[in-house]
Image (cartoon, rainbow, N blue to C red; front, side, top):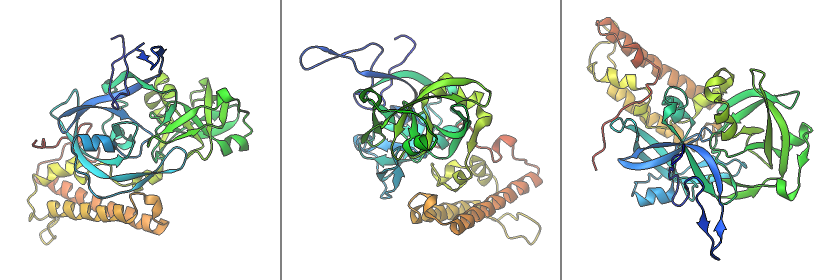
Length: 392
């Protein structure tokens, strides 16, 4: 192949460059081709291709994928907001072990929500991509590929409201846009467009069909042609699909993000909203942070941690209890911290802060015994956490 690879995001949903399909009448049918970035790897040892999607708050798999590979679905249904603010309902979650193609022996245990009719087999969300430094240190793992759709624009947003990119729309409107690598176009909310006086072209050719993560579709109201100015002062012309009840005011799609290397060039302009710390864990508790596991293997459960009369900390029990407590929190609020009130969220933040302090105390104890914990095992998350391989 030329400079692109063919990655299969979904059965029958991948083509090679310039390939054609025969219509029922024997004629050639050109399908809509989109340049995307995929991740090659394995799930429980099976070769798969995943969509690297910063617009997805969590990791997801399609129900067909879970069924085909006989993944055990835990009964923990939840709901997620699509790009048009409607709800997509998950059937539950699956625990799988992911390995990148370039590190096949280093597996990461992750939780994926199962979505019926999901347009991609596997979606790896923003927090996973951030933890594994996929868009920075390890961006060589991103593979350019061509996917095909039947003339629709996929807007794969799934509760992806945690990051924002600062910039200017048109000449004057300072805006925080959601950078979404799972969006095949740029999107603007109808109300936002009207309130800011943008000219909306509403001709038939301007009303593209948009497809969302659960396969549902909605036609755009029209298009806005304007400009986007990055914090550097670079100004580029853009076309926005105008969507009624869009989940966010402005969404920047994959073409802009990749062409301008936004995640590295404009990293200082990307903010993670404070509410991100309140969201539930994307991976099982053992994934974050790994340095706790390192300490757990060295410190004995009954060792004194601070002073002669200090109460010893059993790290294994501490981790188990915190995992159980967070599971209760997640299910109590339907895996969405916005379902909790401000007082409940503040209490949860305090509980997590206290937990981290106890872990830090254990770390100091280890250092005091002459066995300092390396900086790479401190609270920063390693790029590729490892876990034992699951037997098959």
